Amino acid sequence: MKADDLALRLGAMLKCADLEDAFEYRFMFDLTANTFLQKLIPKRLMDRKFGLAPGEYFRSLLVLAYATVALDAGEKLLDNVAVLNAELTKINRKAPLPLGLLAVELGLYAAEHKVAGRRAPFDKLGAKTCACDASKLDPYYEAAGFMLLDQLHAKEAAARVATKADYLAAVFVDALRPHVAEDAAAIDARVAAGEFWEGSVEALRSIAKRATMEDLEKYFR
Image (cartoon, rainbow, N blue to C red; front, side, top):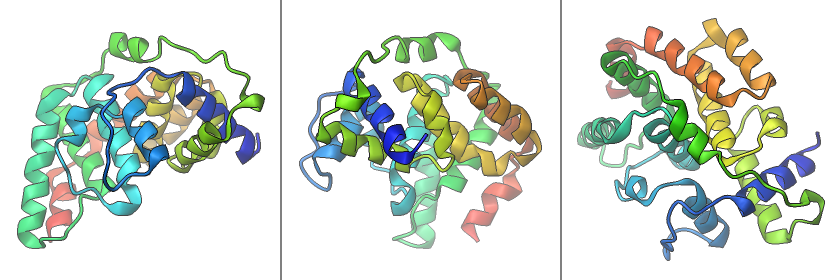
């Protein structure tokens, strides 16, 4: 599929998705970003005010949102991320939290707490599918679709996204993939089949096996 068609597909999915929170972010974010946040990111996550890397800001939020809900990592993971954020700022007041650091911490957390994910929260997130005609999507949600597509490096995954849960899982897998190269074939096969939940669990298991404290410490040197 062409990028325009993929963006329309994602925009239609976002239009039909339920709100996570109706809070309006009056500063820093435009209307499209507000819709993105209201429909995809829980306000409790935004309230943490993590200093995420600017070029990875929205991807990082999506990864954390998915990990805390569908993968059942919960608030304890966010507490750990807050500690890492504070430690980075001790070294450099303006140091951002890179997505790579979040991926390593997620792997360490999953291994320590034996996080395996739960299908029920994923199914709840993905309970609502879109019945819109994407070809007739209004320009506002078409623009939002391009914003969603920008968060995926592997754009072709968008062709199989049907629900909000699928999209969050697709970005999660996409973000972890550079860190789980040894299991990439199995993970890619899941995504290619539209099995986003299964692919995200494969990615989580893979990074949990491989993440080490040395991987974490390199971000603080």
